[in-house]
Amino acid sequence: MNARALRVGATSRAPRLDLNLRVLRTELRRSVAPWAGGVILTGALAFLYLLDAGWWRGTTAWTAQWTSLALWTRGLLFYLWPLAVGFGTLQGLRDRRSKMVELLTSTPRPARHRAAVPAGATALTLASAFALVVAVGGVQVIANTGYTQVGWLPITLIAMLFLVAGAVLGMGVGRALPSVLTPPLMAMAAFAFTALMHSSLGRTAKLDPAIGFTTTEPNRLSLLSPEVDEVRSTLVTLSSAVHIGQTIWVLGMAATGFALLVAANRRARLIALTPVVAGAALALLVLPSAPNRMYVVDTAAAAPVCDGPVCVARVHEDRLAALAGPGKEALRLLHRALGDRAPVSVRENTTVAPWGSTPKWSRTTVLFTFDDDIVADATTPEELTSALLAEGMVPGCSPVGWSGFGGDQYAQSVAVGWILGRLQPLPGTPATVRDEVEAKSRPVWEKLKALPWSGQLARINAMRGAALACKGDPFEVVSGRGAG
Image (cartoon, rainbow, N blue to C red):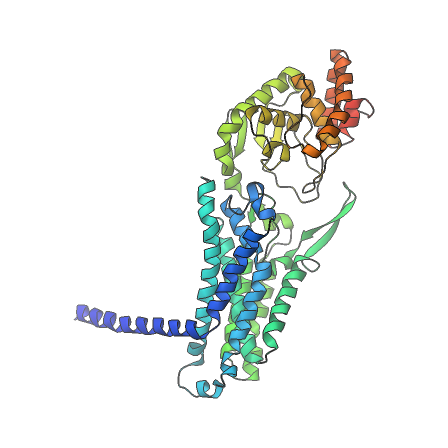
């Protein structure tokens, strides 16, 4: 008897599933959902492949690591999310445009069932389009790295939720306010929201006394936006609190959109606003307020992997073999030149300091990143050794995230030339300024070499002390014109 009931249930479910699939296919043919998915897909790939931007450079390239892929594609929602909202609003006008509102409301089928079909079709196409964008990058990530992890998945899944929730909210508003002006106005409002969250409302100004400039940092409100900050390090990810808070927010947004779709009168439409308001309030209670609790270091990716005294982050383990030899040679040369004052290890810098802050260096460890120009441009073991010598002697004191060329680079050239016994261009030195570096560095190097050994060592130690403490100009110190 039980087996017969199971067979009857299975046979009854099969036609129902087939019917639902036919309804979905029909909805996809007659709605704007495929167009929305197509625009999201082609728009995202056009941005990524037609613009030469930060997502193609260094270790944070969108095809270099999984977390970078998730964050860069999530950043595209600055433009894609308003499009999804606009297409959803256009979809919400369909029944009014076809003059079928009265006919549909008179049918015995529940309103929530009628609303679920277009909402589901839109959700399916938008999520599939974004998944295809991530898949295009994912194929290249697989080819570029052996490091795999799943911590990037929440970033991408919440991006899909933002697209779907934005479209469903737009559908609800389009049905509640059936005007030809509603779709463009909703799209512009969504774009204005992301822009404000990325700039004034979502940023807090802060004066950094160390550099004398005002910088900005993200605040809690910025996390209500679908996009994220630009990727600065492959070791940075979003915290769990951000994932939880944003999930609450987008679910409230989607619930309000669906409630507006099924609302039959003004009172129901007002009640439908409750989920989005409640979702925003709860999300703001959960979302962190401090930037260092929003964007956090991925401890698994940053875990050290070592070959003797030379260490890299686990995410860059495949680069350790090429780094170990030059790293050990750099330590040997530093010890020969500096004696007991020499650093004893080489380590990839996994500390992610706030943008605009003054870097902090170690006397006992040569700290570097693979995105440092001097390291990234080293193509031979000898050049890599020179780069690590430069990082160990004059690591550079430009504020985090800033770039420039000047006294630090001249001091590096003199210091490495002093250790190796010959002055030569360092990796990362632009061809346009090599003559300038030579003209600035050679006289100082020659005067340094002319001093007695004790005088040379005293001046080098003073230069290195100024460089590590980020106090004074190392080049002025090694030139004998600055205080050590």
